[in-house]
Image 1 (tube, helix red, strand yellow):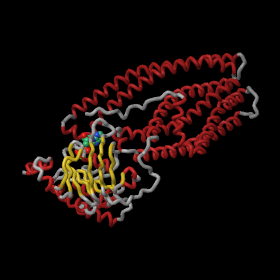
Image 2 (spheres, protein in one colour; image 1 turned 180 degrees about the vertical axis):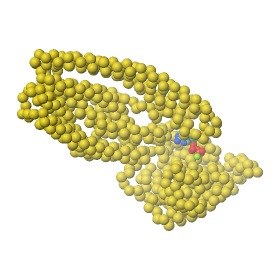
Image 3 (spheres, helix red, strand yellow; image 1 turned 90 degrees about the vertical axis):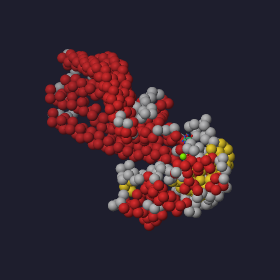
Image 4 (cartoon, protein in one colour; image 1 turned 120 degrees about the horizontal axis):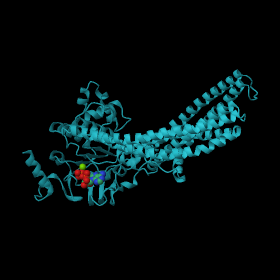
Length: 599
Ligand SMILES: Nc1ncnc2c1ncn2[C@@H]1O[C@H](COP(=O)(O)OP(=O)(O)O)[C@@H](O)[C@H]1O
Ligand SMILES: [Mg+2]
């Protein structure tokens, strides 16, 4: 199976440089419209954190009141307990508001970001899609945006809270219990540095686990996507073995990491509590010597836990922030790409007559610049004319129509429609004149009605019915119990090739394009459906400039003119009869071959 880039790879992390942080600022652009909600959120957050920070101080006074030590304006255990309750209540209100405001900001702004990304996706040119995997693009709009959303709610809020706790908490303990605070300061940095070093090592290991897991997931993805292949080749056992081996590697790596992690955790717990015991021991000495109140010691211990927690939390946030920068970089990169059109203006159709001229076209696909697919190709089609393109597979027939659709730009020469270079027309207004019935019709998930109306969403019920009738599709649609409401697409009924083809034709009839492209529209059909589809196509072609790409003689024969494509150029052209009379010609040869086949 083809080797592909792994979509499940844990997203890369970035250094927290100034330049990288400014990338995150690009995302702030999407927060800006909601800045007041954002500020309200930050304020609620700060207030709820401050309430929590006041808690130990007041709790200490409770102990003091109980032991009869200390002087405070609130007397009595009950009064102070009530104050504590009050603080908790206020804190609860602000916590609620914080979550609420941040949810407003993040949900709305990230929906905006997703809209923006999607708008960019659909307006990017075809050449962009030649070099991208759908899975990757999908993860831009799903996991990358989710990552950013987390960052702008949880991470940012946590960051503000931890920093507040750290600074305010440290200030409080230095103010009320300076001696003990200094003692603590002597032990803390050692723990923090050791923890960070070890933590980094553990993180690298867990990245290895994720990489292995991603490799195992690729096996699942590949086999599920081509499950019919797996079954047809009876490779169920082989694939199961492959997956099992991959999983074994995951387990081995994970177990190795687990032993390190276990060591890390027990180390951190011992050293952390060791440090705490030391501080409490020193505090107890101070209380014994009468230098400190019991309440203050209690408050100190609580603040110490707060501070310790926020230092640990900040370490986690650092990793989160790194990931978010990677995500914003990838998202912004796509948003900054130039689209081929804008979505702002309403769609209008250019009134065209539909004469086409290819003038000395030279073309190579951007992804394969060294292969000249078309060379100095000349071709002209009058308005309303039906021409057929024939040639061996890979000759460049589809490429010719892709250029007409302006999926790509020719490198040399120009294409004129109604005597004017197509590049000069507004892209959407121009493209609205073209209709295509491809070989492989893709139906969208939805009803048959919606799929036909895709050609013209504002079409009425009668128009849709009429289009289905002209496309020879009405009968089979009405044979379904739900008629036009029958669901098709991935989750709906599976239509046969010929049925899908006729839905595509109905779609094209509704769109009523001036220029019609049939790219091997009947090639994959059996004789009976081909007949039905061919009749529908004849109806569709009526009064339109039509380019037919086909193998079957029956389809080609009726064309006003036939062009034989070979070597990126027009090798022969003329009517069926004219070309038959060039016995050495490619076309005559082709016809002979087909007649032989048919017996
Ligand atoms: N999107 C693409 N990117 C790169 N090469 C392409 C692309 N599409 C087609 N080609 C190549 O261009 C050549 C002509 O293809 P195509 O026009 O599809 O042939 P035909 O329709 O006549 O069978 C082939 O060699 C094909 O491999
Ligand atoms: Mg083709």
